[in-house]
Image 1 (cartoon, rainbow, N blue to C red):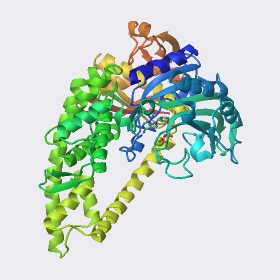
Image 2 (cartoon, rainbow, N blue to C red; image 1 turned 60 degrees about the horizontal axis):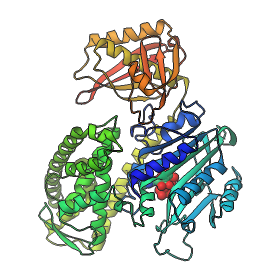
Image 3 (cartoon, protein in one colour; image 1 turned 90 degrees about the vertical axis):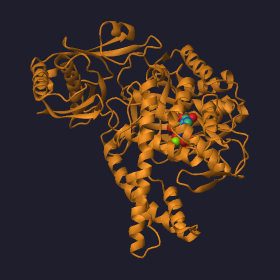
Image 4 (cartoon, helix red, strand yellow; image 1 turned 135 degrees about the vertical axis):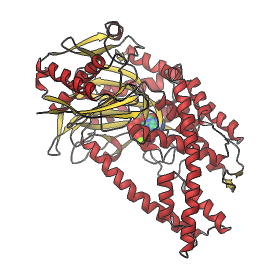
Length: 617
Ligand code: ATP
Ligand code: MG
C-alpha cells in the first residue's frame, strides 16, 4: 500500500463514520507561543478540545503535517523522523472508548488487513490519581486481542499540556515486527524495535486543577494519532521508515550524490574536504544517509509551508538552520562534494507535491534558501577551521598539547564546527591518533559544557511553556482582537500588500509579522496607532459566523485558504472594518481593549516586518 492510498482509505473510513474531513493546519502554529511547530494532529485543535465549538462538528478526521525536533536524537533509528504525517480522528464530547477502540481495530484488521496476531496493545493500570482504565481493557479483550499490557502514567497517560488542563489515560497500539525479540521479557515498553507503536488513542476524561487534583472533565474527548510512515513500513514488511515509497527515492538520491550504497556492508574510506581520510562503518554510513534524508525532508516542509519560514537565528528559523547545517555536515562526512541540499529538496518536492501543493508553490523559495544557507555554512566551516588553528597555536604556546573540550564546544557553538571535525584536526596537528583516554576526556569536557548550555536553554523553554497551551485568558483574548485591528489598519495605511506572516501572543504583548518591503515611517506608525485606538473607542461588536471557505474567500475574508474538502470555517468580523478566518477566541467588543500602543517596529527578514504592541489599562 502507498501513502496516497492510506491517506485516502483513512479519511474515507472515518467519513463513513460521520467524521468531517478537515485540512492539515500549517506546521507553524498560530497564536501559540508555547511551541515552535505543530507536533501532533491535536495541536491545532486545542481550543476545541477545551470546549469551544468546532464549525465542522463533533467528529473530525485529518492528515496533519507534524514536526518533532525533540526526536532529533532518535532520527537514524528505524522508526523516528523529525517530520511525519499523523492520521488523526477526534470526538469532541461525542463517542467514547468503545467506538474509538473498535473503529481503530476495524481499520487496522479489516481495511488494512493486518494480521490480528501482529497486534499488541497497552492500557493504563491506574495509580493514586486515577483508577485503572478497565473500560478500554474490556473492549480490547472482547475484540479478541490477546496481548494486552498494563502500564502506569509514564507509558499510558496524556497531559495536561501545561500545569492544569484536560488529561487522561491512553491506549496504544503496537505492531509486532519480525525482528528477533531482545530477550525473554521483551514487551511493548521496550525500545529494541520488536514492538513499533503505530497508533495512540487518548481519552481525555479528567481535568487537572490548580490544586493538582484530577477532576472528571466537563467534556470528554477522544484524540487519536497514527503515524503514516510507520504504518506504511509495517504494511509493506519493511524494516524502517526510510524504505517506504516516499522516502526511498531520497535515500537513492543521496546514494547517487555520494557514490555510496545504503545497503552495502562495506566499510568506506572518505577523503574529507579537510584533507584527512576517514573510515566509516556500514552503520554510521547508513545513519548518515538517514539523517540527511530526514533533515532535508523536514527543511523542505518548513520552507515550503503556507507560513513559510527562512533560516535565521530565531525560533523556527533557527531550528531550520540547525537542520540544514546538520544535513550538510553529514553530507560532508559521506563525501558529498558541492552544493547538494537543493537537489535533495527537488526530490522531496516531486514526491510530496501532490499531497502538499504548497511545496510546488514555494519551490523557488525552497531551493534558493537552501543554496544560500548551504553556501553560508560552508564558509562558516572554513572560518571555524581558521579559528581552530588560532586557538590551537595559543594552547600550544602555553605548553598544552592541544585545545580542551570547552574550546571545542566554543568552536561548535560559535562556528558550527562539529566535535568530530575538531578531533580530526587535533590529530592531524599532532600527526597521530588520540588514545581512548584522551578522547574520552575531551568528549566529557565537551558534553559537560553542552549540558550547561542546554540547561540554560531548557530553562528558557520551560518559561515559555508556562504561558500555557492555548492560553485563553482575558489578556490574550484582547490582544488577539487587537491583532486583527492592527492588521486591518496596516492594510489601510500602508497598503493591501500587507499580509500576515506570523503572530504570537503572550498575556503581556502581541507580536505581528507582515509582508512589507521597507521600514515603516514614524508617521505611519502614529497613524496606525491612532486608527486602532479610534476603532477601540467606537466600541465595535465582534461577531463570529461559520461559513464555507469558498464563500469566505469570495467575500474577501482574510485568511489562508486551503479548502481541499469544502470545509466550514469560523470567520470573526469586527464592525465592518475587519473580517478574518480565525479560530478565536476574541473579546466581545473593542471597547474592552484599553489603549493600543506600538512599542517596536523592526525587520525579521527580507521583506518581512515585525510589530510588537501592548494594550495599556
Ligand atoms: P514513540 O514513543 O515511538 O516516540 P510517541 O509516544 O512519541 O511514539 P505519540 O505522541 O503517541 O507517539 O504520536 C502518535 C503516533 O505518531 C505514534 O503512534 C507514531 O505512530 C507516530 N509518531 C510519533 N513520533 C514519531 C516520529 N518521530 N516519527 C514518525 N512517527 C512518529
Ligand atoms: Mg516520541
